[in-house]
Image 1 (tube, rainbow, N blue to C red):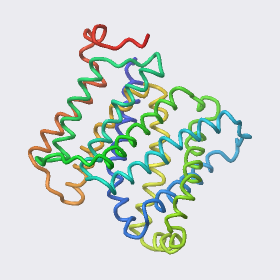
Image 2: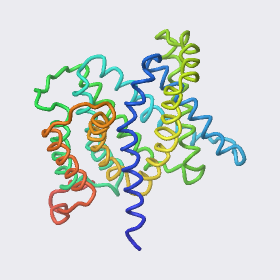
Image 3: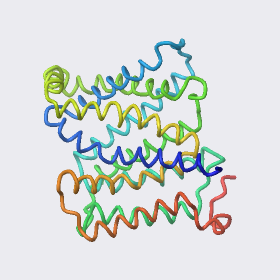
Length: 311
């Protein structure tokens, strides 16, 4: 069946964004005792050890070119993304952050268009973005008026650009073909953790880290939340995301990111019993429509005319 690999890749991308859309529920509980930087440091370090277990028998001496690529993956997709998001949340509204960070697929398409000859910014890509971002606006704002806060909003956009670069770098330098995708993810987490260490120390989070960790391993709910974040949201989902980007390209993979705000809203309604309104349902329809247009490209006949030639 020719379409089977395509379906599998899209299901992997869908699974990944669904998991990422629910992580805040588990993160919210852990943040009762962890500072955000502490939590990410512990999460990345534990995920690094988990992934190391899959590499003990065939461990190879690292090569400089692999280390450089993995360092920049860590700088953009993990450390940079987290830092920009954290700064944004302290300086603007959470709805602004969610909305502006949902522009990741657009920035991915633009950067890919410049950096990768195989990826083109098409009419479908633009229309899918308009539909999805309209739906995301409805879901996140829910009738409220968007209030701009330039400093925080810029940080949110930088977070989106940072993750876009991560996906493009992954596609441009496919080192996983030589060292394995699990090794790429492990090295990425390792470098991101190293970059976080001075940030945690400077912010005074190192001293209380031991107490927070002891609380986590003695609290059943906290331990379960951390296991989910480490094994599923970090180790498995970053592995799957890298595979999907390698197989279908960063632009098509990024299109699924539009679903994250919708999944988060549904999760809040189902788990935290937050109210889901008719406007949110309408917004959800526009988001799904935007993903469909971006992925299926039903307007291919316009792409030859309206796409921007990379040459």
